[in-house]
Image 1 (cartoon, rainbow, N blue to C red):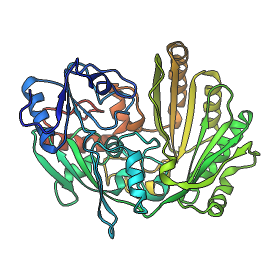
Image 2 (image 1 turned 90 degrees about the vertical axis):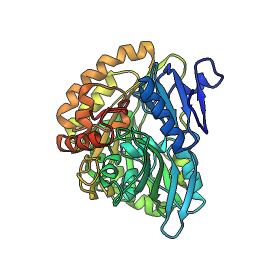
Image 3 (image 1 turned 30 degrees about the horizontal axis):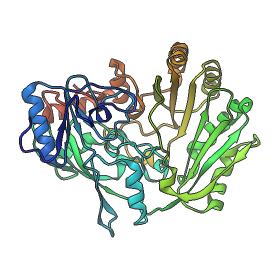
Image 4 (image 1 turned 60 degrees about the vertical axis):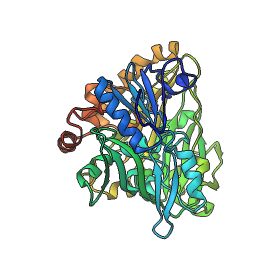
Length: 431
């Protein structure tokens, strides 16, 4: 079917097809899946897709909730074999990671060298998807976004050509890859400068659910300006569960973490506190597939300032909507030190990232979905933009929220150079 392939082609009826056709939340029916072992395989798959007129999806970890990593009737480029992790230069802390790697194995491999990178929150999230879309994680306030550590990328472009993108080689493509998603090519390898860190202080502080307004209001005043080593997030969970304050301090000293956290804790007495030093890889949670019949939806946006009115709106909305969870993650620190136009990720100066998650069986989602939409409308005055990695829809307004006008115009110019036929359109598409 595809000549000179080092990997393999999987088609409907093959034993591996049902496992590979679907993503975390979407069940696709592609005509074929190409499991690539090399950039040459990627080029061959793209050539076949062009010849046959097939839509192309690129699968790394397969976790994006919009289901871009699969399709119906098209071709999926599966990068899971390209999952190597190599410390190229221990002195410079330069590492090379395959485009199909996931964060759990990568974090464990780097820990053996006393290194880490800002990564996703879960172990089986793909390195490629997270990097190309931004990379907000537990080390972001200390070391910046995942993409801020990127120094080069090996890319197969839409015409099948392998190129290297860096500050000195295809610098326009290098700029676009850092935040522009999968619009510009298939990244088969990333080169990054890792950080010298092994242990962190990690855990959760729980507060009474009926004190949520006080907890979130105080957190909103203090968390964005906390020491950069400290990243925190607050969660409102369904069913009257306690308000949880998640904590990650970039360093293994509990006393230092407690000192940094003290102004953020606030006046409300905690119900529980399990902060402890742990190896960084252990903070990446395992995320099994959804139970049969479950559905999943998200909304995300950046919060310029966590105001009391925003807090009251969130708490009231969460209380009224079953199956809805609310997450507010503090930003600032190293994320904000990079200029908004230095990369294609433009949302640098905000206080927090807000994410609403709707998860449940069909009945719960059908009941809560309209409440989620109504709450999101009420939140519009308090939020800005959107974080593409946490989206679950593919609507016209999504792209405009992710890419401000000046960013979009620059991305469109680069898209025209590297993918004029829009081969890579299964993403938040820059046309």
